[in-house]
Length: 263
Image (cartoon, rainbow, N blue to C red):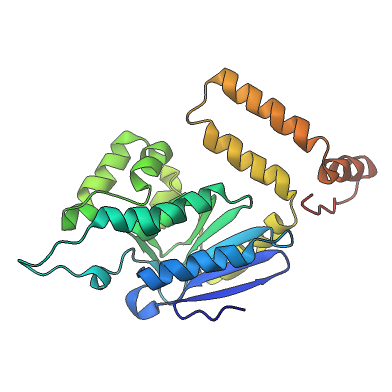
């Protein structure tokens, strides 16, 4: 078992949980945290783990990049921020999107900068009512990154995406839900139980079907209708031969709850 310094990692009952654990820095990312998150995702890749939850410790989800980890001094050497994206953020976003399991972002507080981007890269975002979403890149002379410029207009439309990106204003969880930026916000007091219930529900679902649903929805942004119909055909052909489909039909006919195995 790997010992982590910047995250907490646990798994059981089909659920893996990564907790970003730098609460004094609002769980902002450093190179070391990136490496540990990547190791944790590697560690969870077993058939028994059927859903991933990402959350934060303390009062924040993630404040994005720790600027102290790549500090800039006036007149000093400028960092290659493109290298930071290419080596760390882009691979993380790609992995979350490609993971053959549902990924829940449990946003327990502020999700800012790349922290907001990472939340939006997950399949389902559930947030406390007190949480906020913020893209402050323009305030330090940068553009939204870690996929935010791709996710935003697709989730909320170009007008809201442009305002959120250029003005760098906080969006409350309630407003984020109204806009369609996230799946749901819940009262702070019930947040933990709501997240646990959602994770259990997905862990007991037909995992392969959820994986193919994830692929289909992502592909739809670039596919023509004809291409999407062909993808649906191929997925249904595969899933129709799965154990979970046979169990689902048997349970329906017997009027009982199905017991899916993810196979």
